[in-house]
Length: 484
Image (cartoon, rainbow, N blue to C red):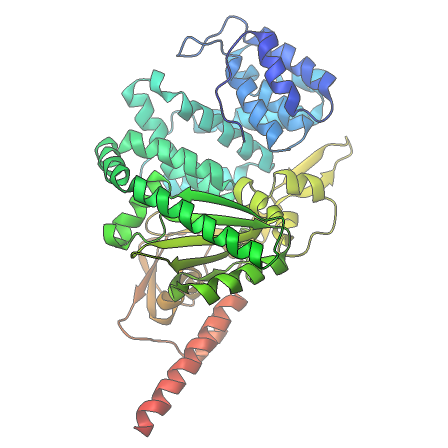
């Protein structure tokens, strides 16, 4: 995705946007001309013409394949707030669907403007965003808007930069994860991290710079070996992408585990045509390299609640170096990186998905109103709840899930040792049902605490399976010890 800043005169801006438009160019051009007129005498803090901002946002929205109405809304998203333009005029000129999106974006900005973000209100603020927006495209356009603000934030005062960064880490990063926009989450988090923790960011950059040459060299060698292995086994149509973990995610991992335990900074993403190829490649890798058992996850057969699908394994390579390998199809990759409301939802919104993409139907229901408005409603809110860890991470669970489900959703080891919970800092039983906005902390024992009656306490089938597995292991241990 091209995230270069847009500069230049109006016609130059249009020429940069036009190649990303599949259809409705005439309608989009009219909205472009209208936005140019509205913002004619306005400039950004950088001194750049204001119209550059909505065109940048529209260009990214176009690349995400959200449809013509979303592109037009991106171009017009600041018109109501920054000019005398009324929403009725937007509806008359560009249609009800565009007007609904622009109105939604305007309302989000109005209701959130001036609110100070702190620990006591951050959950309510997130809950507001999750529940008050009835079209997921509003959130997505808002996130693109916030990213461009972040990329050009150097022109703002230190105070305004810190206010932006606090909102990103507390609100918009989790929201990006919620709608599946992982690429945007990483970019937003890194920008905010460098603003709020400049000393830590600078020290980490220096530490990483020392490791960079070794890591890049290892990355090239690992990629070369894997490519050779795939060629020998006649697996075609594969693309291998290298990556080194982002700044903020590395910092968080170090805070959690320490510098010496950051084992997945080097990573490769293997993209292939079919799910069968994914498992074939995994088998080849595991037959050639040792791997960290605790770091292996099969999110293809058991997708994350967000719909994320991928095989993930961490290989023990050479000279003490480990590398995380993600294996997925091209469609899975697009879904994982840019969200279910990106081109997969747009392409398959009214069709039959299957194969782990059922969540798209829940999140993005293609509805036609009497006025013919396509509305990507967030119906997922009726089937799922959103709760938070003590660190502020957003966890999606099916409705009626309990604190014990939450524990198993975080990690099997945490679930097996669960003895209680704190919900919104108050003591609660492990079978207490959770609701959107709850902050949940799990209390654990040193030993496995699993019990057969737990099977009646949980909602998710994944939780039940983990409990059954723990009960079997516990039984085997007792038999072994009694037989010695």
